[in-house]
Image 1: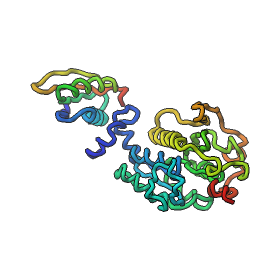
Image 2: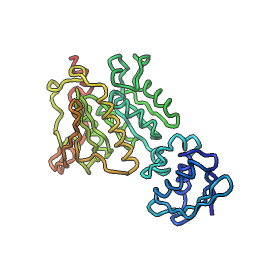
Image 3: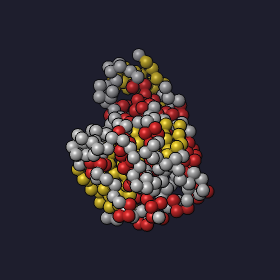
Image 4: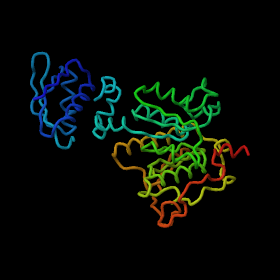
Length: 76
Length: 270
């Protein structure tokens, strides 16, 4: 699974980068994003969900979060 | 594919599901021509430059005059006397050095317009003369170039988007331009400065939507605004089979200059 480190990337640039990465993927494929605590973990997952992607899991990993997302159909 | 700078610059576009990275790439690969960098062309040029339309042509033979500054917001006071295409290009590339601005320092006429428009995907009519508006309509229909028509005067304006041989063109509505002495010029009648701002941005919006292939264009609907009352109205239209240009038996098959195919303001001085 592709891993994209968005730590240190502010909102909404982290979301923009996530969306650009998802655009390049096949529908149904999954990707893992590293997100900072605070605004990023609060905003990015729900924004990706609103964009039609499926959230598969969000886990804390020390000072950051790991978000696994499956590319949705409507998002293409 | 995008540079770091582009991701930042276009982030509010890329976030939109109607645009995304692919849509922004399309805009960067697109070519729009703005005929007339006056009141309508000024906001259109600024917004399309900011939007990252990769190639923007601007056609105008005029120089900036003090009386332009009340509405032609791309030109600044120190630009008075400068060719409008030069003044406009400076602002467009200052807003966005990521784009290419092609200047056509000429009036569009029957003998050059087809050549000028041939390089572009979408045309914006930002001129102020009925004769030139009909010339642009005829050229765009004959060359199958989608375009945005607009006219403003006083507190009122109208605009429509034309997809040649798909939606109504200006000749479906009016077969001929009105006789020159029946229409006031903007020099004679005046125009409230914000009005071309409102309409030029509508024209730019149509260009972006066309290039993206998203939404519904302002086709077969003439949009009117009376800004004094602040009322928008729409007039539904359709292609006319007897249109002299895009009808079943067209009588206009080549371009000719209409009476005084320059500017209405010039006509006022005659």
